[in-house]
Amino acid sequence: MKDIFKYDKGIWKVFGIVADVVVLNLVFIATCIPIFTIGAAKTALYSQTKKMIKGEEGYLVKEYFDKFRENFKASTIMWLIYMVACILPIIDIWACTIMKAGFFVTFCMIFMLSTLIVFTMTILYAQALQCTFENTVKQTLKNGFLLAIGHFPISIIIIIVDMLPLLVIGFFPALAGVAVTAALFAWCVIAGCINSFFFNQIFEKLMTK
Image (tube, rainbow, N blue to C red):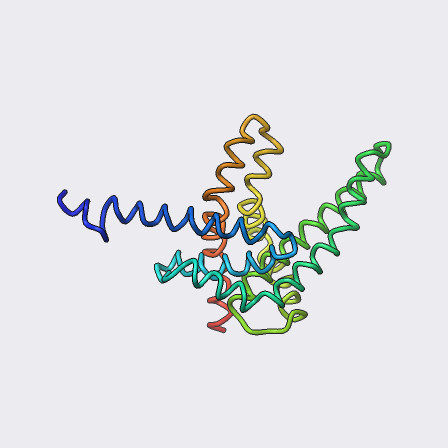
C-alpha cells in the first residue's frame, strides 16, 4: 500500500500515462489543423504510439516533432495523393444519394464506398510504414495497399478504431459531445496505440522474413 504514492508506481504512474496521452493528443490535433499536414501528424503519432505500447517512450512531444519534421515531405505527398484520389469516390457516393434508387445506383454506391475504404486502409498502413521503414513514396503506398488487402480483416478493425468518434456521431448523434471530447483529449492517441499493436505484429513478421 505504501508504494502506491511513489513517483514511478501506483497512482502517480497512472497520472503520468494519462498526462502523456492528453498532451500528445492535443499536440496531434494542433498539428492536424492545417489539413494538408494530417499525413505528417499521423506518421509522427504512429512513431510514438508504437513505442508507448512497448514501454519505450522517451520525450514524447520532442520526439513527435522530430518525426513530424523528418517525415513531413513524404507523408504530406502521400496524404495529398490520398485526398485527391478520394475526390471521385466521394462525389459519386454523394451523387448516388440524390439519384433514384435502383440496381445500378446501389452497385455504384457499394463500389465507390469499397474503393474509399481501400484507399483509407492503404494510407493508414502507409503512414505507419513511413515511420518504420525507409522507402520511396511510391513503394510505401504500394506496400500499404498490399498489406491492407493481405490483412483485410485486421484492416477493417484498424479503420473502425481510427474512425470510431465519427462513427459514434453518425450512428448515435446524442453521444456527439462525448465523441468529440474523447477525440480532442484522448482517442487519437488511444486509437494510435491500438492500431500500432496491429501494425507492430504485421511489420515484425515482415522483418523476420
